[in-house]
View 1 (tube, rainbow, N blue to C red):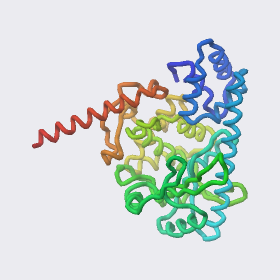
View 2 (view 1 turned 135 degrees about the horizontal axis):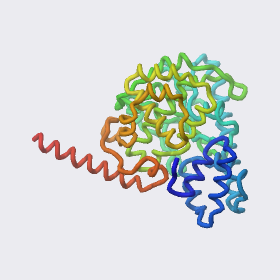
View 3 (view 1 turned 180 degrees about the vertical axis):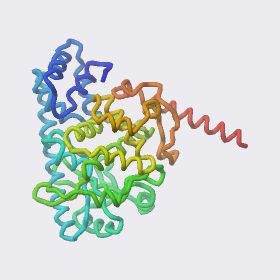
View 4 (view 1 turned 135 degrees about the vertical axis):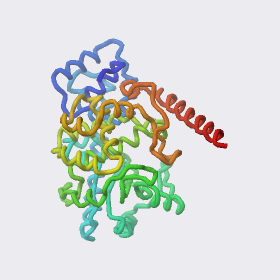
Length: 383
């Protein structure tokens, strides 16, 4: 990927599990430049949630300023401890789930940590995501309550319980129930959060994804000393793509710089590198489900824009038409305000320039304003 700044180029090169010798040389040369901006570099590293990978790779490439090296050492230690604490929580809860004969499936962060990233420090996660049958929810809720969890959010370091109206709204309309939160025992992880899913989409989405099949085809593995279920590799990739699709296109995510987080692209890139993906099965699944093919194709093409070609050619040819998907890559939707994932406008800034450019927030607001203004004009014409 062609980057507009040295800092962005170093981040792209280092945001992977393994670097080639050529990539290491490139990084060393870029950092040696007198105008390399460490403040801008660190700011982007933290925004994109890739500190673990950067810390692991950059210290092997060049002698860092003492303060930068100390910061990366602290990040590595903190990431490792956060991941260890969440794994311990998984072991504790899944022993109870298993004893109650409940099928609970882990996905996203724990799956990545277990099978993709070789060290705890490389990839941390801020919550746990589990998939269950809706019939099991009352028992899952009871178990979580017994372990100190309540539904709500943490605001300014304090827990705020979710009211009944919002709990009901989440249950009826969103892809997961109100988040379960409990106080942690460590300053490094002061709060633990769990999102309990019974579906992958909201009522506003025109995308389907068969949850029953995903649960039936989940695979059993060990996390620590405990048996757990995780997504099979094919569904793991599909869901990572679907999740990123919503974040990348939603104006509400863009507004808080939570749209083009590089760590989510790394998850897809390294999962493809390190897992056995049944690409023929993936093609069949996304073509059978409403809207899923477009979502997965969209995310894969963005990942390839960053890291180069990573999927088989027959998959690329079978999944998208180049002109159609390129236009879709530059589209914006609004899932929450508009209660639809239909397109409301198009970027003037190419993806490669948007990735490290926070001015995209202002551009997105302009696009949304134009959409609202034109919608009002259409309503007036109807009258």
